[in-house]
Every structure is written in C-alpha cells, then in structure tokens.
Length: 242
Image (cartoon, rainbow, N blue to C red):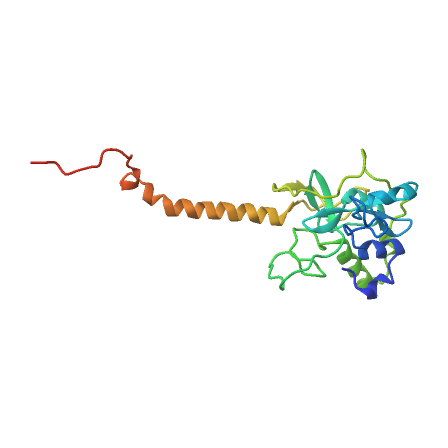
C-alpha cells in the first residue's frame, strides 16, 4: 500500500485508486445483490458497484479484478494510464494483469534472486517492481514527481460484452512473456523472460507431485514380485502332506 507521505504527491485519481478498498459492499446499495465494488471511475475518483454504473456511463471506467486475493488490473488498461515498465505481470485467463498494491509478507523475504526494489518480494528477471504502488514509491523517492510517467487518457470503457464479476481463475502453466515493452508502445526493456502465472497454484501442484512420489516410494517395495502382497486371494496355501 502506498504510504500517506506519498499519496499527497500523486494525481487525485491515482491516489484514490491505490487507496480504495475494492470488492467490499457498496454503501449506497448495501442491501442489494452483487453490490461489490469492482469498477473505478477515473473522473469521480471512487469505487463503484455494478448498480452504480448508470450514472457514470459517460465517464472513464476501469474494471478492477481479483487475482490470488488481491486487486489487479489488465496490463492493457494500465498502460493507457501510466508507464508500467518493469512491473511484474502475470498471465491469467489469457490476459496479462498487474497488481495495484504490494502484497503483505508474513516474514522477511529470503529470496536470493531478483527482488522488488521496495518490498523485496521475489520477481522474475528483468522485473524490478511487484506492483504499481511499489514503482510509484520508487519514482517519488528518486525523482520527486510522476509527471513524465503519467499518460493523458481521454477514453476508458468497460470490456465487451459487459462487466464480469472480476474473479480470475489462476492458470497453472508457465507462459512466455517476450519483453517488458508496454502495450501502448513505451519501452520498458527488451530482455526476454518467463512470468510466473500463479505461484500459489504452481506450489500446490508441486506439493501434490512430491507427496505422490513419496507414497509411491513407500508402497513400491511392498508390491514387488517377491512380496506376499502380490498374491491373489483364494485357497489357503498349506504344507504338503507326506
């Protein structure tokens, strides 16, 4: 989360976007169904639920999605608003997404490879930031302003055919990301890399495989050719009578 010392230096819409609590119930439609706030109005600088949209149809609207329990936006949408070069992207549901805010870590990171400059979360090369907020913090610390990193976006609408619930199902297959060049044309580096689509899902698969291998190693000797476990049930074996 961007610290309060930084939010006062941000454009109003960006400060509101990074501090908004999405997927909470809308206060205006508190008793209605499907009242979670999963849209952000760039003109009004506030989060909206699907029932709020009628009064904001002519405004610039950004859909917020939920990925591994944290808020993300599509990289294509983000690139229309600001320079997202070197922010770690993930591919899920055939779409590239980036996290809005850094994710809490229960303990200090021991990752020995590439890490986020701000929060030390492990990243794939050549990324430098785990989220939009981490890049924003770094720029303000080193340069003092964001002017050249903010783009003028006059049009932003919700995806066709319409608004979905924002819940994204993580994929478990690694897919290549050719470069960190933004989709709007701004260059963020040309180094090829492979992005992790879902670390949590990948770890679950690995644990299942390692557990299965352990079971196989335990039970294989007991089922070998010389083992009594391989005999079929039938007439009891008795010693011959002489």
